[in-house]
Image (cartoon, rainbow, N blue to C red; front, top):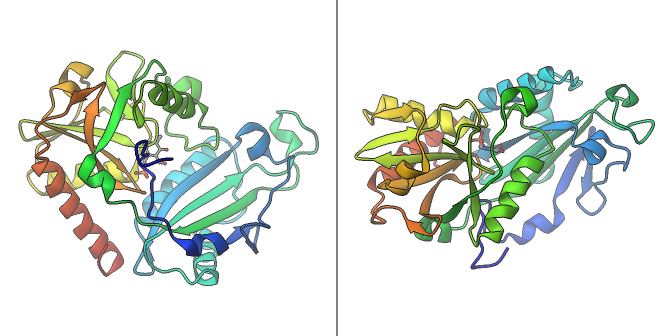
Amino acid sequence: MTADRPTTHDAIEDARNRDIKIYINGELRHRDEAKVSVYDSGFMLGDGMWEGMRLYNGQWAFFDEHMDRFFDSCKAVSLDVGMDRDGIFEALNRTAEANGMSHDVHCRLMVTRGVKSKPFQHPSLSRSGPTLVIIMEHSRPVDRLQERGIRLASVPQVRGLPMSQDAKLNSHSKLNCVIASLQAEQAGADEALMLDPHGFVNTTNACNFFIVRKGQVWTSTGDYCMNGVTRRKVIDLCQANDIPVFEKNYSLYEAYGADEAFLTGTFGAQTPVDEIDGKRIGSGERSVTRRIQALYRALIGRETGGSA
Ligand SMILES: Cc1ncc(COP(=O)(O)O)c(C=O)c1O
């Protein structure tokens, strides 16, 4: 990560993160001592699920929506979390308290099928219950990306059909996205713009993707991308504020010709896009993106009882 090769997850350097405590199955360990077994299903196979969440003003933003997705994902792969959403809530708050964190915090909640008895794939080899890890960091996205915008490259790696590996599963294995990210890097871009199996524009390797054309906001149908919490909130905000919004198929042709484009994700909220495949997007004026950003900040404020 360098100044000329940003990612959508670049945060302002915060020295406090060198000494954070990490939750592992009920224990809180200094990050240098926070370890899981080499037999863990997450390490061996990427067999686990995770959620990225944010804490503002001592409140978890959109906690219910994150828990809906987390528990649906775990249920879909028969992964017993070992606790309900109240238990997760307590574990999150315990970790925040142990770290003295209450605002501008990003959390990665991870659960895997646990430690295996042998180094092979079958889920039945995971016999000791799940591994639950919570990493929280002081985290504020860098301003640089807001001014400059992110550069995307469309890549050969596509989002798969739901019957191969449903993109809605927020699995530990992100190899599909990692390959896309590598392809974007090789093309000299910051992040990958991924198509669906029919060639329509779908999503980026780590965020959902929107364009703005003549005052209308477009995003993919949602069939092949992560069911992003931020994506949903942006669509709802547009609908509530008379900004025409459409979930529809469109191609790179329409993305290149857009007036504005932006990414959405819990970490960075809305990140403007500067170029796609070397083509500048719009004039750089970004008035609709800015309006949506303001609406989203106000929503976070209402949700968490303070300012975002
Ligand atoms: C591939 C992908 N797309 C989009 C997102 C954004 O989702 P959210 O808005 O819920 O953070 C994520 C985050 O987990 C992701 O992994």
